[in-house]
Amino acid sequence: MDERTGVESDQGDRETGTAERRRAFVALGSNLGDRAANLAAARVALSGLPGTTLLAASRVYETAPQDVVDQPAFLNQVLCLETSLAPRELLRAGQAIEQARHRGRGFRFGPRTLDVDILLFQGVESSDPELTLPHPRMFQRAFVLVPLAEIWGWAVGMPDVDVEGLAASLARDQAVRVYGGAKA
Ligand code: ADP
Ligand code: MG
Image 1 (tube, rainbow, N blue to C red):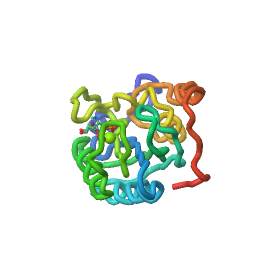
Image 2: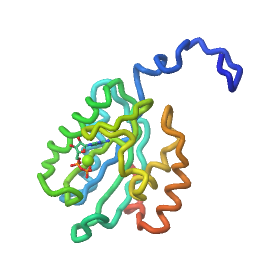
Image 3: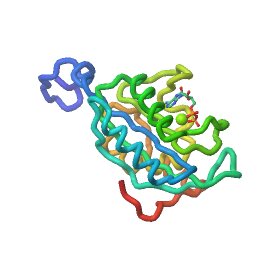
């Protein structure tokens, strides 16, 4: 019985009932080479991972670089995946996809052909530096929150955060704009 709705559930334990396939929001970024092609390749590769389905993709946004400003503008996009992979398996898969796009060994916050970050993973919080969840800088970045807000309707088992409100307030100070009307 769900205490709030009074609805009987045949699922028993809600946590274990959803453990098979969980949702994850993943952020893509690129500011070198054919940026749109890099994002497209990442979408295809992530969709093709074992036990993984691409549920939703935000529009692609173009963002001026922030931490290191003397570099080309980024394209950014957020995806919602459903996956039976463990968080760490998804992290490793994302890193392999980055490598496959010849991501250089540049400096932190510097140019990259492809960056794949896990923003949120259903039911998981972690302070491990190798995989921090929620992603430690996501709530300060309009280029993450604006696209995330577009597909936040797909959120299940995510932190109770006002993503739309935060995105709107960050977008007042940080310029993010839809890139060429490009859709996934
Ligand atoms: P950044 O994305 O912060 O600009 P990198 O892509 O080079 O920088 O990532 C640096 C490290 O961040 C990686 O070695 C990875 O293990 C770690 N990391 C910690 N939390 C996450 C996360 N949620 N998603 C992706 N990488 C993460
Ligand atoms: Mg990264």
